[in-house]
Length: 383
Image (cartoon, rainbow, N blue to C red):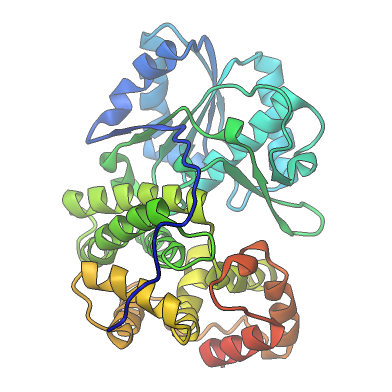
């Protein structure tokens, strides 16, 4: 019988983020911000979200609570050091005392990145790593409009270097949101492609956090429930984008996966995905999803990892590793992510593999993985 080793490994759980979940939860943003002392808010978002109308509604609720709002709507996908600099400039001009990140992971990461620099000085590159902020940071409310990154429940800002394109994880407990508002109605406005890519990313988080070297009893609970919610929710949402129950499952599952990441980190699928995004512009969720089945098969050769995968799979009615891998591949097909990608130059696979092996998340993969392993995995998936 497959049996995981003892779950009672040491952990230090410090919940920092209040979660407010439910349809129309956005209506509480003014009350919540005022309760945290907000007077002048910087609302960080992107222009697509502005078009969807969510920032206008949030602004109305905030202003009704007597709070002044400045809008920064220049967030770009995979925000860079330059994006953070522009956000900080606007925040300083408005003399804000509170931040709200409204949108996908990029909006929340930009708001967190801004918070580091605005309160502690320097540039965001100075905070690459963990715990490098020495001064208090402004309160932050995170409001996701996608079910993907789980950034609302994490203390990390993921920012790319504008010059080198290397993705930096800037983490500090002070950067975590005070409140995460999870309103499933906000996710209905996502285009189908965004729904697919972010949903696959959330599912990958649930799968990877199940087996990392840093997993523990607590992270395992979060990742297992996230997997259960996401594995069924994503299939339903892809079939019917207006299925609100499935949207709710995905949004909560994404947040729980984010909480698991905070306590267990990620693994080799994310390590393999980042070079694909950097070199070929493949959307992060698709890049992670493409690599995930192969990484599961690779890790499942390690008995302990196999047992943890099976524990999560069986909680969702999946009986074997082979069935789990097949299910992941079926979801990729439904999400339109199994077509060959013409932009990938196979001659660069050694370069991609070397870069993947240097990613921070590779160090948390349960089975040791080196550049040669990554090159074989890339060939399996991309050739």
